[in-house]
Image 1 (cartoon, rainbow, N blue to C red):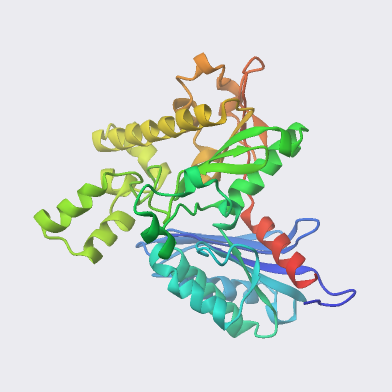
Image 2 (spheres, helix red, strand yellow; image 1 turned 180 degrees about the vertical axis):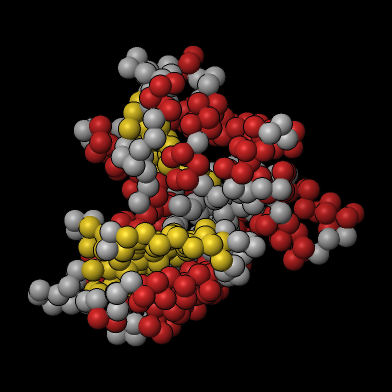
Amino acid sequence: MSTGEGAAALVLVLNAGSSSLKYQLLEPDSGTVTADGLVERIGEQISTISHEQGGAETVEELHLPDHRAAIAKAMELFASKGTDLTEAGLCAVGHRVVHGGRSLYAPTLIDAHVIDEIVRLSPLAPLHNPPNLVGIEAAQALLPDVPGVAVFDTGFFHKLPDASARYAIDRALSDEYALRRYGFHGMSHEFVSRRAAEFLGVDYAGVNQIVAHLGNGASMSAICGGQPVDTSMGMTPLEGLVMGTRGGDIDPGLLFHLHRVVGMSVDEIDFLLNKRSGMKGLCGENDFRAVTAMIDAGDADAREAYDIYIHRLRGYFGAYLVELGRTDIISFTAGVGENAAGVRADSLARLAGFGIEIDPDRNAVRGSQPRIISTDGSATTVLVVPTNEELAIARHAKALVVA
């Protein structure tokens, strides 16, 4: 599909997370942002939205019960600040879609079949695919003549080696039902790993990297010569690290015990694992800023939750360091990874024997650009690399519609 010579290059990106919504109106080639916004704490008593447009920022606190309300509020702010999206010259609307299964992994024009497949896969990403669909429906209603492009979180990990992708269960069953590790946050892992290599001036295909995407959802990846070889999330975004409301790795037998002995239904267990686990389940808060404040105030549950969080991080760092054999770059990204200096220092504190050393002064610096936080003598360069999933989505969307 082509928009024709001289067509406008602006893309509207909708990136719905489990409890957040990021959106941008931008020009993909240059990365120039016309307007952008962030909605946080969707579904909680007080949500916040910050919308920046024309050099002015609007911040509001209000109750946004779900992603539908959040998207409606974002569209309202676009209009009130002088941007009519129907006349903005959009070439595409780019949507982050978390789970694409085995068949949807490349950026894809959205049609009825694609929507049906995203719906079918929603049980595998119940916190994400439904909000992604809300964004698709809202964009189609507001901008029916603008092509929508789905960019899948699982795409970067589509070619994981079988040794890391296949679960050790009955082969025929897993093949029939496509039971495998899919991996998530793929756009972020790809963007950050490429940006890290670019920032350091090294060949992307010639370095081994570990990326730690630490937000309300959290995942890690091991990338060898530009190809992911392992990742912490699995068939669903529940596996792996401790997260905001998800506990990550647990003994599957615990689930049988909850059903048979505690008497919980499958739906109740699903709710527990997605909404009442992780930091939220351990100390009552999933926002790391609030958890840090609780620790500073002497809260023992928050302290223990933090220690469990760090313990799991260290385990994955250790596993991936061994798997890669040689690790040239470690990058921290996303809300916690970019802003929580203590998490970065604590998770790597015991790795001096591997030649990995953090510089405390560099680590304490905050900024919006990639930066080195390791010492000059560290065998592995440790970075903070702000992720930009929206720019990655916009570039994929434009490339598809003008091809």
